[in-house]
Image (cartoon, rainbow, N blue to C red; front, side, top):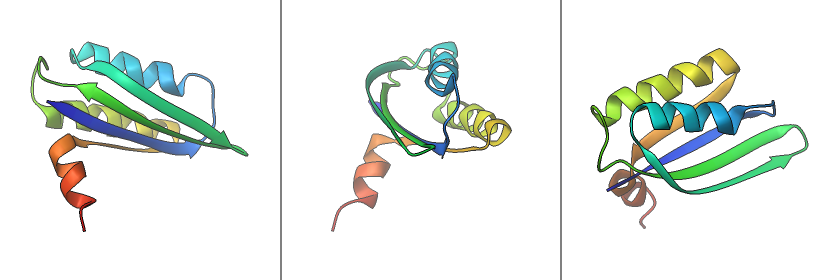
Length: 89
């Protein structure tokens, strides 16, 4: 079971590292990541295996969201099934 994590905001050093550290602290294993910088805008999408999560997905999502607000980023974390349902026509 996977989660999709998206991060968007002004580019800064350490965004990927901070996001990955929070995932690791919840035992979420990052299995794929893509990121790009367009001008000074950073965007990233991560796929994290949350099958061995220490706690629930909402706790991971809340901590990522909090870090995002503190860093001027918008971060969403959702179960892959919800993400896929949102993007079906």
